[in-house]
Image (cartoon, rainbow, N blue to C red; front, side, top):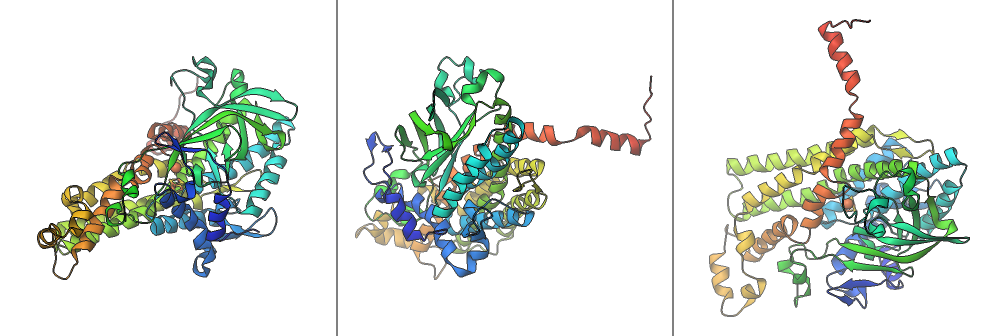
Length: 487
Ligand code: SF4
Ligand code: FE
């Protein structure tokens, strides 16, 4: 097949028999649930844009595994130019959805898995790379969405996996059989899992020799026996359940989601195991996946930032103050911050390099700088958007009141802004700012900017490791004319 249409994607999800729980109940049809559908729409946009000729340069690529045209989300990057296109594609999708479109996790995991398995085989004489390549060829051919799963619950953070009181705090192998393994554990914050056909599991930290049962990587269908998902709550999520939910949603069509995924003794056949006890490679896989995903934020968050900046500019217009100098200056600041993030995404891609396996990897230092900036700038952009929007974004009555026979006329009269602007437009834009900075999309735009792809301290450790301080000190000594005394 190679490339699915939006409709085919949704149809393919309907066929899955996933166990998704929300508010304590099994969801009957996830593809029809009003809280889930907006997130499905966002992911479906990765298929819909691939159907449009004007976006195909970014959305499609030629597979190096089977020569077919495939979606770039399933592509193994072959050059720095490819890595740059990936960032541009993510910005485009952020612009079109104003939310997290979820499909990047699998793309980033696959690229990391492809080159890490190659190096594992080189050292151990194993056949993980061949198995993974075969698996990924299948994914490309089906145009499936694969969720990458990394974050374990971790229990007491000061203790390694084997020292936890509960041994399941990190996902682990509980049984080894001739035909495969049985795994138990959980993965947290699983972006887009309900909208994915498969899940690709990786360890979450570097491992020691004794952690063999925890150094495991594999892929299974998202409806495999023993997998269950518990849907994450988002601020204002039940607004989506209201009758005729529209204006008060802010973002009327799109959203994102995260779930807790439980692996309750899930069987993984041999051909889908890509790491099985090679503890010394767990760290490499984690770092590479994190690096790819940290660069991704220089695309997606920038696209959502574009939407938020546009909303702030419109709020100013609707308030009648688009020409006020302090408003203009705040908008400039927002653009400056947003484009700085984009520059980081582009820079770590442009400085990408070829791995031993042949696919390209971003520059690690710059990708970590990118993500470190993402832990800060979207907060400042959201703060400025709230400043421009005014308090009404959080005090405005519901749309039902606007539509009420008795109350509507008062709200229409007193919430009027600039002449010629319908009150409903003002409502919609303020709700959109609320949505991105405080509502359902804030998961992806704010808190995920902080913690997604690793919390700020994780990047600082990588920055410290990659900073090449000895070289910098040598430069300073040279310029200052310091000659070392030798003994
Ligand atoms: Fe993609 Fe961004 Fe969502 Fe991560 S947060 S899955 S990079 S859209
Ligand atoms: Fe993420």
